[in-house]
Image 1 (tube, protein in one colour):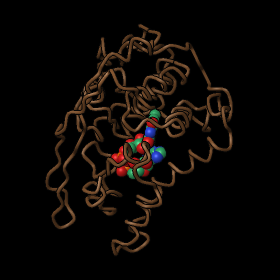
Image 2 (spheres, protein in one colour):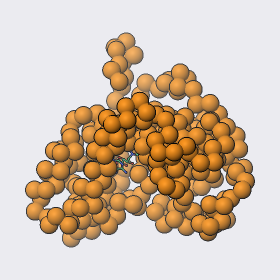
Image 3 (cartoon, rainbow, N blue to C red):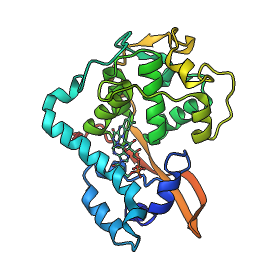
Length: 268
Ligand SMILES: Cc1cc2nc3c(=O)[nH]c(=O)nc-3n(C[C@H](O)[C@H](O)[C@H](O)COP(=O)(O)OP(=O)(O)OC[C@H]3O[C@@H](n4cnc5c(N)ncnc54)[C@H](O)[C@@H]3O)c2cc1C
């Protein structure tokens, strides 16, 4: 955790955070599990010697987390219902099989690549979380609740407030409009080159799509009682090096294997 905090570079963060290889902090599991607070990270970043405007983007993102916690505190269990208004255009309350571990394959190569990594490492880049939620709720027509539980289950940084509010934001029940991303956007930020996919459309075409893409027609009930069958988890790390304010190396590395002892109680 110390090492990750020390690699936070707010300037690079602001310019690259939306890209799959951007200089994100990967601090969320530590924050979500209570090892460190957003205030402690804010204090650290504030004392790095940058001007306030240079750390604004990073601080704004920390603030989203605190805001979602306040929404939960304020709403209580109402967090788990549509927050602002009913989610528009709901077609079902299940989850598309295409994103489940057993049948990987949305046909969008960047998403499928990141899903594989997610099942292995328990982390998803923020943009990928948004893409997946949008595909599931806004193209397949799923109600946000079950898919949000699926993502929560697999995340190392699982947090009820951030996760629930974000799914509701993407699906339009906690925002004024649904979030959409087309293939061009996904190619740009996930560094892929897919063409002629069901997302290779203009935004106008995408938002007015009448038919559910065939890749999302098969649905499933995500059964949590079956899902908890893995006792091993790889711990995720990403090494980032900086030179003259440019990223020189970024690579993912599984460096420590955590083993769960099924004979011991688990505190969640
Ligand atoms: C559908 C969806 C589900 C999500 N579920 C969770 C979740 O269960 N737990 C969780 O911690 N975050 C969740 N997020 C928010 C965000 O994706 C993660 O916090 C972020 O990707 C974690 O990576 P990082 O630590 O490298 O973040 P950085 O970009 O380095 O940001 C630093 C810290 O700021 C906070 N933060 C950054 N972006 C956001 C954001 N958009 N919303 C809220 N806080 C943010 C996090 O605590 C993060 O660790 C979700 C977002 C979406 C779109």
